[in-house]
Length: 435
Ligand code: NDP
Figure 1 (cartoon, rainbow, N blue to C red):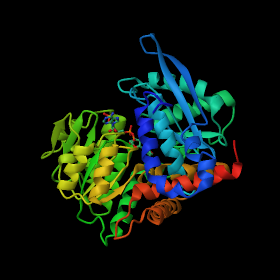
Figure 2 (figure 1 turned 120 degrees about the vertical axis):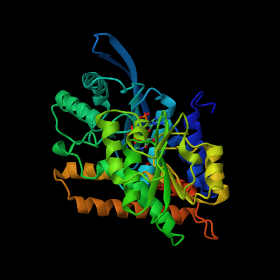
Figure 3 (figure 1 turned 90 degrees about the horizontal axis):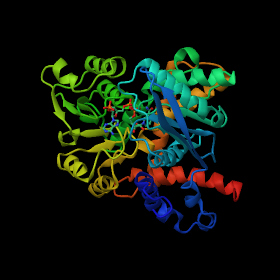
Figure 4 (figure 1 turned 90 degrees about the vertical axis):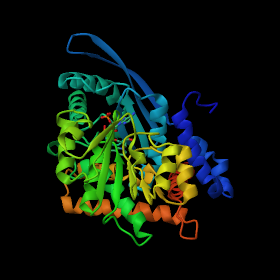
């Protein structure tokens, strides 16, 4: 905390990992001698830059952009770019730190990074977003590259923003390389990248349920968010026979007791991305649904829960409510949506609980596969990618079990993910000596 004043999110993320790996490293002198945890918790570098752009009324606007390159021990830095007014250096440091372990868990050669800006794309015209993205990349381009640092999308950065940024990178460098992932299929993107995070989170959930001899058929699910991760998690739950009861955004949540079917999910996708609308409008569109303003959906009784919006959206009391209502399993689609108190509630109740760094790694895994396709200058088939995603999620689940099995039928997935991710990065760092 003293080294990182005012950076609460970052301190929270480091504390969670430190608590979990404490016993594992206790008798491993080399990790202490080489100060591995301290080194992973000190980003390799952070660049911060001015992003200056002109709005449609010809006002000059100034935002701040960052790229946090946390660790490249096992591969080029890799992690998304977030555009949201809540973005700070602390948020990006926590995300880059988490990303380092997540990427290691996928088994693919990717280091950890994260970037973004305190820019709010909401209410901006396409042209304003384009000018912002171009200005952002005009600064960022000197710090990234296909073998150096490969950003992707995140909150507020979808296909449109990736297109504008890739176009600007190509224009400045005169190179067509795989510098970003999440690209359109016409210019080097990968099939199922869009779906991968949400689908992967549900695959992970299914793997957890399987350890109890159960599956998703007939299970009710409460999901937060209504963006990329939430809508695709909902889609996969429906495909696997479950019933989705809620979705949300920053204004509140909708509860549809009849279930949010594929048709309704398609409406939400179009409403949020094409029309850039609010989830509140769902209640007016579909009979029987209600909108609850200013609240998160954790009070709705369910069998499984998937927080898929943002960090610290599921607090201690929310976790207690989920447990009280009989929720059996929680898989985090978002990054660190459950605060430390909530994590402890789930651990104490010994319900199935998967942290984001394991459950939402499907997105970055397919991004890794997009990098491979770009290097090969080929596009792989959908069936092949679907299978790889399934295999990777199963592999991450096995790693969590290997290091998180506490006996008596209880698997501490948080501990398992932290130790498995840490070990891989730490051992690579040991090989390099003091650098
Ligand atoms: P989107 O921008 O597509 O959607 C974000 C959703 O979360 C929106 O519904 C948004 O509501 C809501 N939200 C954002 N900020 C807040 C807030 N402060 N309070 C309440 N709700 C909020 O983002 P993604 O779906 O891509 O990302 C969601 C989460 O998943 C993030 O934590 C991200 O880091 C994580 N993630 C994403 C991956 C990906 O592949 N996209 C990969 C791995 C993790 P509103 O529209 O009102 O802003």
